[in-house]
Figure 1 (cartoon, rainbow, N blue to C red):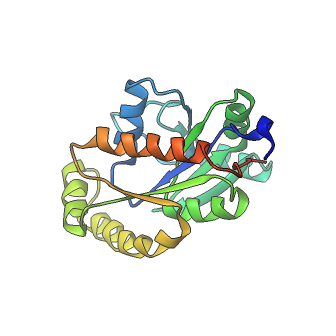
Figure 2 (spheres, rainbow, N blue to C red; figure 1 turned 90 degrees about the horizontal axis):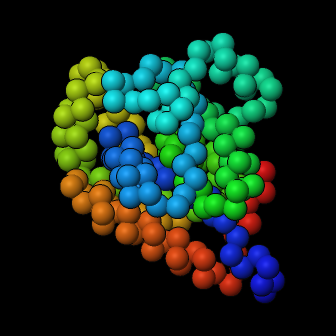
Length: 202
């Protein structure tokens, strides 16, 4: 083993169905000031009242997003519910240059794409305790119409089939964010102990 590469920094890809709690987990991790580089993705959708440009997402016009696509500035992108989402290459290269572990939130479709382009990343699937619980959380969010809610639930059922693409799975119980974060940290510790470390190359 090359000792100089034994502590290579990790790129953690956190994914799971809409409404499973990905944003809440990352928000709590930031509040705890855990030493990660939090990669901000770009989207063409409008921000929610609780979201901040440059912190939760980069909220871009469709023309700006298209320009980034054409220039090859996105490592992956996808259309989700009529809006575009993408991961800027610059965000990942910045994390690697700072020698920090980075964490990235994407939908399941985006994770599948990243698995092909960055197979050495650590892929974590955040799973709801049940579909009934996921439906309750989406309704509680009150940001989707009844038709959109049904679409998201159907998509979530399909996304569950992608579980074999991931390295780890964590069940997202509501009001147990500390437990989820503890498990993410445990995964990081385990990955740092690998005999053959993961090496991220863009």
